[in-house]
Image 1 (cartoon, rainbow, N blue to C red):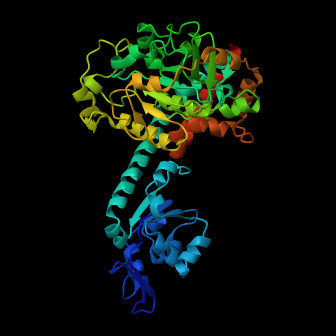
Image 2 (cartoon, rainbow, N blue to C red; image 1 turned 45 degrees about the vertical axis):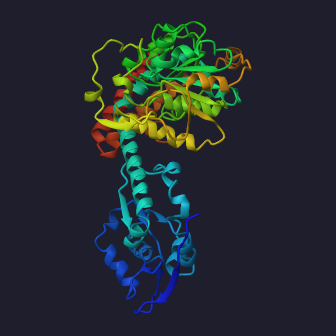
Length: 504
């Protein structure tokens, strides 16, 4: 726990209470109220939807914010000094803020981990953020402040990346989900949740380091659940290894090429319901999952919605979420570089094998890898790595092992060679295929879902929530810009798609 230091309360010349921390004034010895007013006068408090204040002290700044902020504004207060915050509870500014439901206080050592848990949850894409640093707090807690700001910038970066993905993929996702309606009878991925308690899982990605240890995976099929990502299916098969399942989540046609026509008969496909139809056609047995996006709410109305997984830009993030939900332990990562290790983009035998590639041109950033060497990477891959690290920290009950033998995933994992990681799993045999077979069940669907939504679109019905969820998916940018013309075009586009789907 952080040492609060020497806290000295005294009366300022104005008659207001002030305080010193280790002999340095935290508020003015003359007039703390006027000091706070002057400090906040240059801040655009009235424009903010979310205010993040570093340094609370006795609450003088908070009192100014309460007077000036607009209704509905959220205020998150970071006070690193827990002792100081306890003293402030006796003062009017803090008492009023604690009664005010929009203030959230993060105190003491918990400040460091705040963005690991929050990550802008509940914030809208149009929200204006205002970051405020109370100068004495910034001076006394400089290292914590800089770390907190770096985490905040990462959250903003990640939110912007998610929004851009939404703009790009929303229409494609809906088109694919509609074209895949004939596959909705496939098993729900939720039927796998909790079914692999303490079964070792190897998540195989297709980073360049996979070439170093893919052969070590041979013979582990009866001791581990081997889950291939879409990109790593062909490298595994080329190495003579048949995974128990392959996972796909990217709706693009390019990513479909990793799997289309390559799935062995005995391999289960675990796929997001909005991927390319050619992927679903490639497998005989499928577990489907949703993202919580439309048409999930539509299918839920008629009793055949698929369970959701958390997908954050990369199929490996969905695999990580699935591993946590299935109960696997330990979870071993291989081929998960998040970088252009050894100057390459992918492992051998992917669909990109043999194409010209320059790590220097493609990876403008450099990060330290597990060997202590700088390696080329991108902001996107760093964002995926950061997501992994945050997710891993939320599950201390699971042992995560990075057996990639390369790349930049260092936090939240034990770093071991694959041979050693597999040795630690023991010799207990698990019939993964039998468990998958037992949990595979066909789901009943109905075309009434399609006719219902067509009726909703034609009549612009607002009573069931379907049209708003549809527009949130396919017309996000138009909604943010209040572009009614584009919104109406999207509705008409949806009508045409639904008519075609119903006509067959």
